[in-house]
Every structure is written in structure tokens, then in C-alpha cells.
Amino acid sequence: MAGIKALVGLSFSGAIGLTFLLLGCAIETYGVYWPMFVLIFYVLSPIPTFISRRLSDDSESSNACRELAYFLTTGIVVSSFGLPIVLARTNTIKWGACGLVMTGNAVIFLTILGFFIVFGGGDDWSWEQW
Amino acid sequence: MAGFLDNFRWPECECIDWGERRNAVASIVAGVLFFTGWWIMIDAAVAYPTQEQMNHAFHTCGVFSTIAFFMINAVSNGQVRGTRTEKAAWAGQVRARLWLFIGFMMMFGSLIGSIWILFGGYVVPSEFLPSVCPCWSNITLIYKFGRTEDLWG
Image (tube, rainbow over the protein chains, first blue to last red):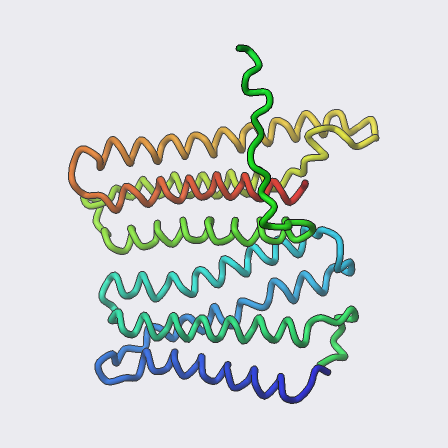
């Protein structure tokens, strides 16, 4: 295990990211909760990487499954930024809320990336680690 | 005079050491372009919802590009070049080439269609954004394919 400090730090940054998202919805001048839909993208984003790591053993060579996972993960991340922009352009949410949501997105995805870097580097990617 | 460019070489770009990460970077860039193109289409469809503002048939360019993308990426380079050794691979090679041919035709056809929409529908009148969207998503899908070809490199 890479340590408790990393875990605490990552969970703190995750909480900050979710705070930004909630601020984008709950501040009185914004008031609408449509941006919460990006939570779907947060949940979906690690899944392709998990699946590709589970299915394939070689970690060094070029791996088509892993690259497909990167492609899909990038798509999910882009979608989570695209959704607030589209919502703001149609005036469903305000641009200030859009900015807060995108900041929250950035923090959350950096947190997820941090999880993969800190806790995912082992060769033995098995469920016992949980 | 015939060979005067023979000694011209592009300046060596040593700033980025690609190495083994090239495929991963290519797939990430491809993902960004592909999904950005689709979100631009979604944005145009949301901003101009009626048939008069943006003809709904314009979506077909994006759809055909996506289908072509998956078709092209489904076939690996080895199958097309016929580097497999079994005899039955001959028929597989021909079929793979036909599949790729149809995929490329769809890709280029939708690209041409989207450029047509861009110029024919919108350069003459004043509305700009709806025209950009199908064209952009097609260009990005073509670029994306050009990059994911690195995946087999």
C-alpha cells in the first residue's frame, strides 16, 4: 500500500471537486441541479481502464485493449466537459455555474488519475487488493 | 534541377521522445478529437432545434463517419498486407481490403458531404455555426483515424 497520506490527500481532493460541483448547482443565483448529471461521467470514467487491466496481463508492450480503454476514457472526460458547456449555451445553467462545474471536473479527474498512479501500479492487479 | 530537393530534409524534431508511449498518446488525442466533434454536433442540434434552422439530415454525416471509423479500426494492418501464413488467409485478405475500401469510401463521402453543407448551406447566407459542426466532426474523425493507425505501428 502506498500509504495513508496518499489516500487522505486523494479523498480530500475528491471532496473538493465534489464541492465545486455542488456549488455550481446550489448557489442561490444558480439554483438548478442539471449539472449533477456529470456524476454519471465521473462514475463511468475508470471503468474502461479497470476492464482492460483485468483482461490483459502484459503491461509493457503495446496493447490494443489498453489503448481502446484510453480512447473511451478520454471520450468520457471530454463529455463531462462538453455537457456543462452545452447546457450553458442553451441558458439552462448560467456560465458561472458552468465554470464551477468544469473546475470540479478537473479536480475530480485529477483525483481519479492520482488513484491510478498511486494505487494502480502493481503487477498483480487482482481483487485481493481491495 | 530534377534533384534539387533531394538534400532537403525536414528539421529533426527531437523535442519529443515518443518511444513506447506513442500509441497511448495517439489514442488519447484521437479520443479528444472524436468526442469533441460529436459534442459540437450535439451543441448545434440543441442550439438550432428546428428543421428550418438546421436540417436534421445533417446528422447523417456524423453518423456515417462514426460507422466508418469503427469499420476501419476493426481491421488490423496485418490482415490487409497478408502477413498471415495460412492459405485461407488469402480470402481473408481480400475481404479485409474490401471492408477497408467501403469504410474509407464512407469516411470520405461523409467528409465531402459535410464540406458541401458548410459551403453550400452557410457560406452564402449568414448563419455560421450549424455548418461548422458536421464539417468539424468529420475532419476530426479523419484525423483521428490517421492517428489511431499508429496503434498498429
